[in-house]
Length: 165
Image (cartoon, rainbow, N blue to C red; front, top):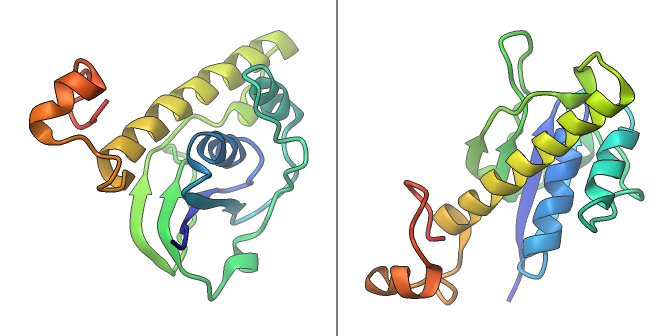
């Protein structure tokens, strides 16, 4: 069976989309080919690498990639993880399904190194929770999905308004 393709996007491909790529690949990489890119790529933020390492996910070999590298390619899911009142997120032509969830940009935060790392960990944890909800709500295969009447038994109490978990 061919793996479905997922592309995470933000502006710099330095923090949020890099962490999302690492989280998704770690949890669901057996069934998906996972990528990330940005409209204005820079470098992977060292604090993104450090915050992911703390939970056992190594993104130290990741590099920031431009959306141009993926032009002409098709993805099953294109997921935007940036956005705030001050910037516009990129758009990518070639997705079958699109999702957007804005997360604060931890690399834009001005504080001490310790405060910055705490924000990276907070965003990492928010990304993980949202990615898991997204997967169980929209991406889970029929073979893995619980029957509606069995959801409480196999998935435990349903805590999210749209999740199978």
